[in-house]
Amino acid sequence: MREAQDHVARVVRRDEESTQVVVALLLVRYCSWHTDPKFGQWFGQARDALAQATSAAHTVLRGETPDLASLRAELNEALEASDPDGPPFEAAITDHLVFATEVLDCLLAPDDTDALAQVLEHADELAEGHDEMAREELPAGHELATVDFQVLESDAREADSEVTVDRRAAVQRSEKFADLYARVIGLSYSEDDAGSGG
Image (cartoon, rainbow, N blue to C red; front, side, top):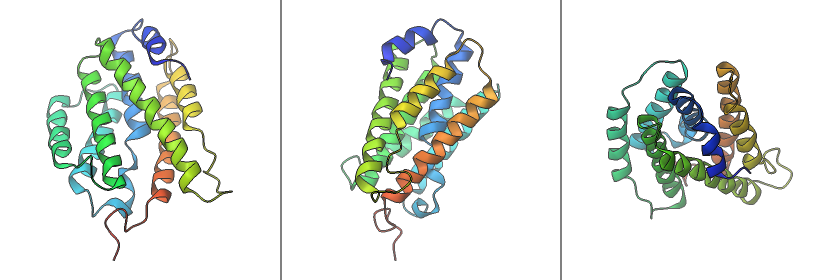
């Protein structure tokens, strides 16, 4: 996978709006799994914060300007209420809230190359971690057991960074990634793990 710093160098050659598009697509890829109804009763505040974050990403991708500062405050509140040392599922929620706040910081300051590098590195970590989740948690032979999020992320990142990007195709590509990502997470946690079991 392309090193984050090399990718930053490619992205920052373009204008701030293009950088925001690249970053917003990361939110679509990694924070859209909040829609799984199995998780709904258990982490309402975090779910709502992630939902608003992905909604803001789609607003950016439509060329509009969401209220990022207010969203950043809401993400902070959800993050403060989460427990990174809780059970694995809650730790995963916290990690994605942290990622969403990092992406929001990039959207607020698209010229901050250090923040951009941090977001790209965190996305790489999420991709790698969920590759391992698919291999370790899903039954052998399952269609998603061999999904390679690292390759999918690298391919999406390359396409998203082209000088001329078909924004609709980029969104569709990220939504396809997000669907696979959400399915792996959903299959890896039981209702009891997610706190909604009977």
